[in-house]
Image (cartoon, rainbow, N blue to C red; front, side, top):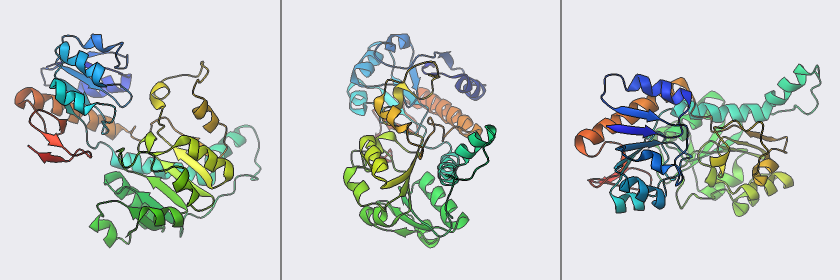
Length: 345
């Protein structure tokens, strides 16, 4: 199969070259992101391989289909950047990588919690300047604190276990489908409002759906504990950033750690150190001393890159042979729920 990979970094190419060994797929790597201006690059390719900040709306999918592309291979878990209705309309199969590094993402969430709490990033900068004062670096014992985990899929489940079994936290959870294993470990499932009221730390691990869009908003922030720590390593649009900024200003949110941002498409994965950031909301976040931002880094482990490449190549091979694949989120022969779970064949 002829594939064009958009938004390619060196680490993507390195991992895919290994995964492609022994296959007959022909790949063209391009640095450009997929959008309406670059879609013409896919002309004549059977498959377009894209990432989280590529755009595959109806206009792009129509052009892809018209130029002969019948398969979109996402090298990520989320597919909210793909118009699945348009994919159905134009007969383009879409597949994703449902999981690739649940441990990596969960561990990164813990890293954000630890760094925000003990302020190791600020301490590091002080020491390099010869400042050994401890003023302003006061943290708290995480042991014994109440942590709310919103979403207990594979990543949320691992996060809950680390916090409960490893740190000795009381773990509260909210999910429409409670996990019996977590219950056996002492995790208590409660309603969202109660979780928000009682948690000292809240960590988001749910998919982005119409129901979870802005699950953290002005109303939900008002019922949180004063000084709560909020962590998001899932999807940027789970959080109403303007409402969070107001929460930070009032002190309701004591600290914020995010690896994702709703408007990250024009920021993350690029070196903008010589540019002026045009996103005023993001720039405002950067002014808070109690905000820690990483650039969609949580997934970025050696194991994850290997898994992403392997599963993506497997998806492509499956589609070439069968006209569908195990991880299809839409195909003429398959229909899925909003979470990606297959419900009909």
